[in-house]
Image (cartoon, rainbow, N blue to C red):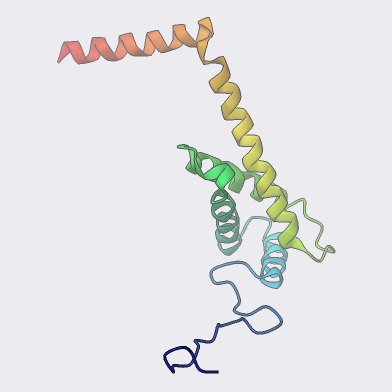
Length: 146
């Protein structure tokens, strides 16, 4: 079919049926199960499984609900610790380890946010103010000595 000026209309690219390009730098369910079995045999989390957990946490922290916080690295590290604890409790007979650990990651990030909010909410209490004033006075005394 010719366009107005005689050129062909550009064709749109559609991914092939069945999924298109595989996602890059993400986790395969079979590889995750393999690493879980290896970590069970050794009794500790393997380095590759730790990298997978870090990838889980970093990708989940990119969600708009979690990404706007200044302490996003703390959320990620808390999620990785939770994933390491959940790795030893995982039932290897289950087929979809990816979904299990993705859910654990999401709930770990939410739990860390709730904990941070509790600290923020109690920031105006007397005890918090006393501790803050002690820290500030110690800092001022040290800087005045120099």
